[in-house]
Image (cartoon, rainbow, N blue to C red):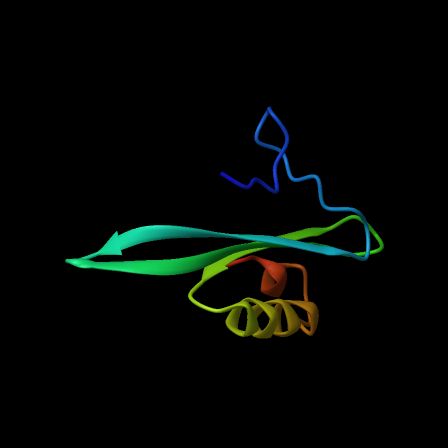
Length: 77
């Protein structure tokens, strides 16, 4: 299995970069492919989410980046 985390479960994402991997899960009776996505800002803040497409992850990241306060920058799953 691909991982974007180290052996302790911490993200290995470098500042200004994104990392992602895919996994398969069951939703009801269907198997669904999902993306686990990490993005670390140049200042070191980490954004992480899971979504059905990479584009959806990036949209969530962009919305998070434009948050006006630190409370707006919380990731919601």
